[in-house]
Image (cartoon, rainbow over all chains, first blue to last red; front, top):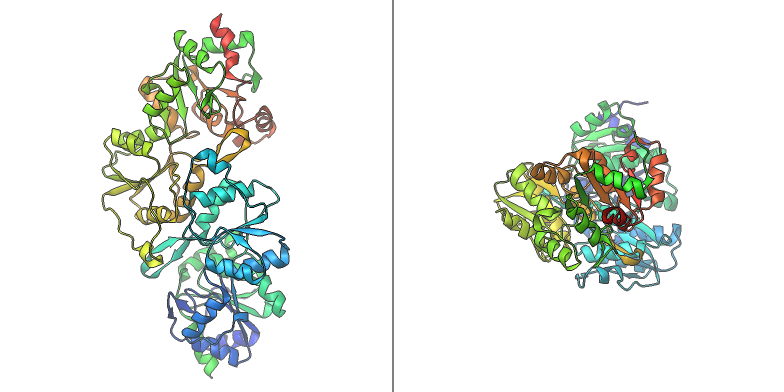
Length: 305
Length: 305
């Protein structure tokens, strides 16, 4: 087994790139931070494509459609099309349509983007938008339910409140009702070390109320990779996962047998990776990347040569 | 060690009652169900007092003040005064004042009753009532904080929403900020097998966002018993805990060395108790009651004799 946590440099970069056919990139903290591209990232991605590599974008963020991602990518200078983008709004819709073969509506705790992706595969939803609290306990317990709802899906929803939590509980009291979560990220990190609550908090509240565990679509769940791999016939051994989070991006890579590269422009640090490597804990070894770079811009010289 | 899960009957009831000085009752599912007294319960409690037993009411419900409990108790025919009632709204205020010696305000996710109990011990709060979502991520991360807030307290709050979750996260990002939860009940059971989400769901969401564990006041946490025991000098060996939930009432009793009696007018069943007894799992043995009755009305003949 090759050593882990290797700092990438000149000849190893070329060797690594020669060994892969496809590269999967996380977005926030990897190719952009907020609304600004990471310096050099667009050149890296455009050159990878020019060099014949297939490039895909895998993000746990559930607040954008494929279309919205492509608009943002292009605005920031990335050469990309809708087919390259796998967000959890899109992948959740794919799961419900193709895997679960859902025949009914979704009760959606989520965004308009999720609603749109569901509509794109022909699945109707109820629930998006504000849902103010009214009445008292007995009213909440007897809240009218839509009999066509066959699944509860939880993604990021700034309108999340007690009423929505209660509706989800009432639907999920039917053991036949599917229960899907887009991702378990506990926080959305912002510039300056600040953060706001992530989908993982909302999902945990619903799971606690329903006394059931959701099927999770996002990284590190293998479904996210399967979604790309099946459509494009990816060979895991010839695929590189690039991300800024050890617990989602790198763990997904390990779970799926991919090569993994941690970039330090986002959440996790080299010290975090090293701590996992030295932990002696088998569960943590999956969060140790094969390689580390300060920024994906370090791939540029090898691509330009 | 005496056998467990004994069905109480004639002579054993008298023996048990003779062996205790104090009896602690959970409320919902034990002495009342919703807004109706359990048949015979008021007579049991009034006769216990007449027979010289000290009677206290211990409830995880955080939506009522001691005053409100006494009003309800009296309306349903129970002889009770404020000093007999230990709810988590009251006990949380006691904890913050006497144990944590809080010198500052509370950010309260909770009810007006909790606000009132805090005021009764001289602790100001902010946060009660609706808190509609406005702005976008960057606004949420930079939401103005009250510099006097030194604790976040989470109880039942029908106005719980993403904005409150976010405020709690921002306050709790300061590691000096105390973090208290009234209880971890996942559901509030209602008549007819229905239920609505309980405080445990809200607390789990906040714990997930804050990446911290709250100190929990309610049963099965020992603090709830200590609160009564310290004030009245209770001897655990001469105290009986009567409840309808194995995971809160009976476990509290076991944790504190009390005698325990499960009544079947509420959440847990005799089969649940038996399953714990036969599990061979040390963690579950604390949820096995010493005695079981169909209803506390079964105590009546021994008290009337």
